[in-house]
Amino acid sequence: MKNYSYIGISFVILIFGIIVVPKIIDRINEREVVSSNRSDGQEERASEKVELEYIMVNGEKKKVPAFEFIDQHGDTITNKDYDGKVYIAEFFFSTCPTICPIMKENLVQVQDVFGENDDFGIASFSIDPQHDTPEVLKEYAALNGITHPNWHLMTGEREEIYDLANSGFNIYAGEDENAEGGFAHSGYFALVDKEGYIRSRKDRHGNPIIYYRGSVPRKSIVEPGEEEPQIDILIADAKKLVNDK
Image (tube, rainbow, N blue to C red; front, side, top):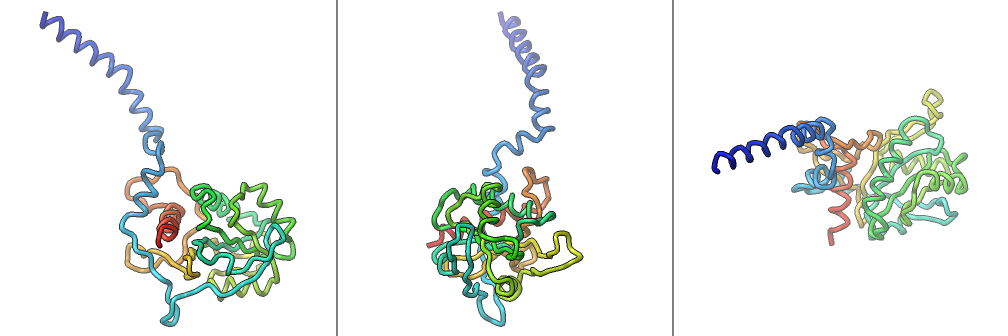
């Protein structure tokens, strides 16, 4: 009887090896196992033991200056509308043929993480206000899945927008006839806390990263030894600020 039991067990193990093991190997090769639950991986790793820094300029904390523009709904939006909210700021233009589509896709993913959380928002400032009227921006929002009530796509006086970009945030934006689309901008995102201060984490060398690279696609898989995608880092840092009381 014992011999028959051993034979039976051996037969089950053999069948398991023939049927199941190849499937496991295929799943690993296709990286399904790695990417099956992203929120348990990259975002959690990105948030481990993080202390967010204030950006210092001339010995003072860098605060977003006052601004006032018109959004895609025709409403007047100022910096006061973001008081008590954590928000991400970007500079873009709706006809941008290069990095803006990537930036927008990344921000839509960030938007989806936060749902309709009223303590979170996004501020998108057009650097081509002559073309990007409220009507154009409203259509752009609809085409790109922009739904969060605190995501304002803003337009206004060109010089005021450029001053906000280059002096207020220190994120370059300007006209450039040699650039595709006629405008040049950095593709960075700024993270602003509930009191209007620009914040970031430190890099591996102990220096504040200051801004987050928004023009790099959010990767579904991070290979061992690779740096975490900065959109995952941005999400983790924004969550931390949203949850701070």
